Image 1 (cartoon, rainbow, N blue to C red):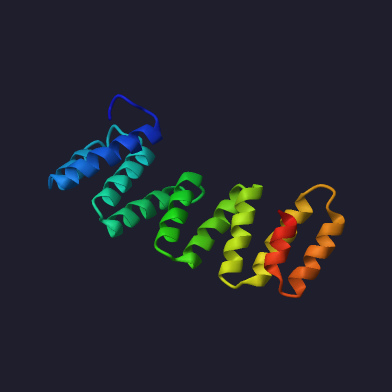
Image 2 (cartoon, rainbow, N blue to C red; image 1 turned 90 degrees about the vertical axis):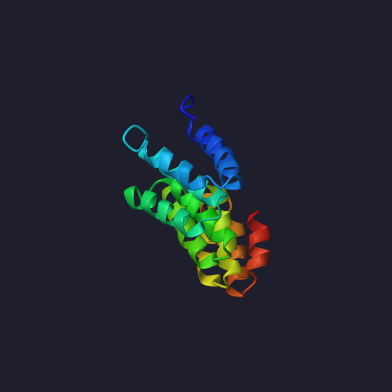
Amino acid sequence: YELTTLLESRRDITRTLAGAAHEMGRIDSLLERMRSRQAVEDPKVLSFCLFDAMIEAHRLEDARTELRRLHDRDPADLDVLQQLLQMAENAGDLDAAARHLERIAAIQPDLETLRRLATMYAALERPDRAGAVWRRIVRDAAGLGPRLEHTETLLRTGDAGQAAQLVE
């Protein structure tokens, strides 16, 4: 663990160690050892590693708390927002997932994120929001004026699925 500095490498190592520690009944010892590194460890790296260890140990509430702590330090951190999004989706909480995806789209409004947000709004039966995101996608795409009009017509008639196919 100490020999690597890359966040993803440390997270991979942590998941492996935590899985073994959990099976041997030594997860508390591992978590204590990790927390003892607070003075020398990058806070973001340590929090993500603690989060991963807690997930491996099936301590979901502790993991959520650690992730919230990390989010409170930097609410615009895309890594943290992505992890919050994944956790909400895994829990089946689409409302929370949509909130996290909205924040991600505000920071990094790439096409894939916007498509995902529009699709999530449609799944949540929020056609106005889905339509607004689809209109944004179409407007952002160069040379798609006629498609924009057709897409807006489809959205007004409640056919968000057909509008999504037209944009893709």
